[in-house]
Length: 79
Image (cartoon, rainbow, N blue to C red; front, side, top):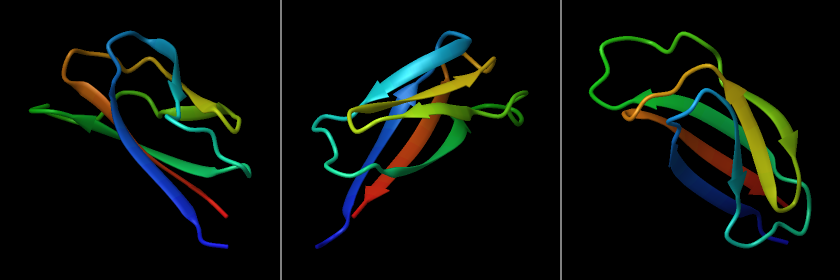
């Protein structure tokens, strides 16, 4: 069976938890990697984005980073 790969970019404008929902659910549990991105930012984020839960339909990230120009990129892969 081929791997299923989904990617995305989400604007995180509020500190705390953010749920990211897949357009279509996975059939098997995905592995997920996230990375912060400050668009036109002057430096690194102050906190590490942490994945706090994963399901077939969504995953949740959490940090105190937030701004109108703060984004989190992600990739989810499952067999």
